[in-house]
Image 1 (tube, helix red, strand yellow):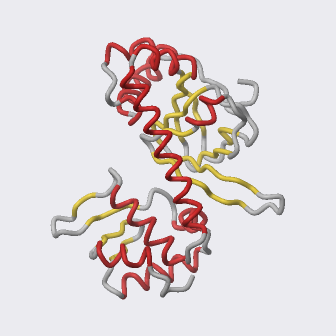
Image 2 (image 1 turned 180 degrees about the vertical axis):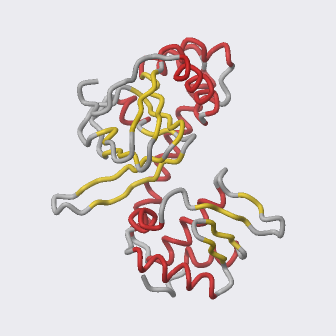
Length: 249
């Protein structure tokens, strides 16, 4: 824990309830029987991270997998020139740090709280013990890590795309996630998990470029934009934009 900037808060009834409510809902644990989770839940702890808090510094060793109870977390790299590359924006209900913590390796990226957040730390030892007891959980961990590997490949591919492709791919991913909701007319409504400034950083474009591309998509009848809510009117057209090279950044 010496590498962690944020220290565990004192155990309290509210924290215990938060852990009990979050852990079974995390994707990695959804197929695990409640009886199997009891021991693991008792070993978890909660950390509070006010906005701007460095949760994980690059090069730090993680004590376990982080589950985000509420708030938002940015995973990013910073080059020698000081330029930041946003790798992922973690919304509430998701986890991060699986591969690094399970392998016991230093973290390649930093994690910063974008808003006041609370996180549950799930110790590595408890995860390994559950894997030994429950073969289905071990399979779930393997599948999750495999998905993360594919997401990394998609990230590399995205870096080679133009801005319009990246935006279309990002909106498509939001539409296919649990955050995507039907609008009742055959379309899908998604809500940007963070500000447009951070979404632009995530996509590697300027905020002005993101705004221009959103207006361009809207003018083409592909989407409608209302602040951070975006209605996807034409999923097929959005899919074509994600693979098209016709639009420049």
